[in-house]
Amino acid sequence: MKFINLLKKELSELINKQMIISLVFVLAVFLIMGNVMQSATSEMVNDAKNPKINICNLDDTDFTNEMLSYFKSNDTEINSITLTDNDYASAFRDNSKLKSYIIIPQGFADEVLAGKKPEVLSVNKVQGVSAFSGMTGGTEGTVSLLNGYISLKLAEQQGVSKEDLGIIEAPLKVKEHTVVADKSAEISSGTILTKVLMQNMILPLIVLILIMMTSQALIASISNEKIDKTLETLLSTPVSRGSVITAKMLAAAIAALLNAGVMMLGFSSYTKGMMGSMTSDLSTGVPTGVTDTAKETAASIISSGDALKQLGLTLGASDYLLIGVQLFLTIMICLAISIILGALVNDSKSAQTMLLPIMMMVMIPWIVTLLADINTMPTAAKLVIWAIPFTHTFTAMPNLMFGNYAAFWGGLAYQIVFFAIVMFFALKLFKSDKILTISLNFGQKSRFKKSKKTNED
Image (cartoon, rainbow, N blue to C red; front, side, top):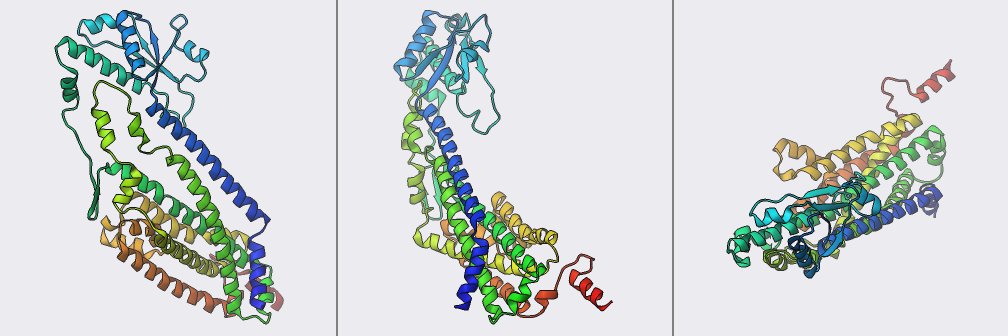
């Protein structure tokens, strides 16, 4: 009963109104970001499936009008642009939603019929520098359609059939296959890597945020109780010191898991919004062009979701359970280290400094695993990276996904041993009186020693 009351006390200090408000705010931010990303990706997919071209036809000949009619007959929406006194910006003033358009100059048809290379003008409006601002509404699709039509007309002049032209433009028919272990699927490796990368972004970010939050909370809790002398009162109560440290760690772990659940829910919504629309539906929306090569290639490609299942790159319930176990063990390691670091604090300013060692232990493996494959690194560098316990958490999902079970279980075993060692020193420190006097002063006298000297004087 004493332990339960102690645990309730620690939980009430950690899970307060401020924490609940911050969790609601974080979840709201992720949901908003997910909706924004879904809107942006949906616009990209819609542009690919339903091509729309904006054209200012200054040539206005039978040839150009026939060309535009050809595009319309192939389900391409044509938006005619009118300029005022050759002012390119006037089109954007008349239509605020317009992002770009193509100008077909006078003499365009004459140059095509003469077998020359005609010129068109591409006009684009820049109104922002966001990542997705330049991915939609461009003139690339329009230029591609114009090139295809002109190529067809030039080929007809030379007596080349549409089928022969298709072979000339794309003499090779490439079928991409990706192999993982002993399984293969007909899909490009780039598509697989993009999908896997998006999935593997969730766990590292959650681990990074959780470790920072739990470390700071526990270091601040220990240091504040030590500075305010409430720790002395707590340790003098008829409760074992083992129960005190267990209650603190368990309360911090519960708060961390609550944060993890909210963040996973929010980040899942974010990634779903970002990747939900970018599926194999793009293959059904290939713009109608001169040849059917692109359509045949797109139709032969299976969806990325089916390919991941075929390659065995999906995780089951047992895999997520193992990842959860390793995540919990990671949090416990972080808490054990935080207890030791919190005991070394003399004042509130030092509490922020004590977070630096944990940050370095987290940031180094996170950046390394993000940019490189640890298995391909030199042996010395590999050993240093593997010695950091948080590295095995960042590689847990890829190891399970690609069947590297030896690396996963080896990392889990190493984390258990590392936790046992750190917890041993944390318990030893907490059960001794050094917890009240130990400090890391960086050349300055401890405030406890100063007070003792003052009393003696």
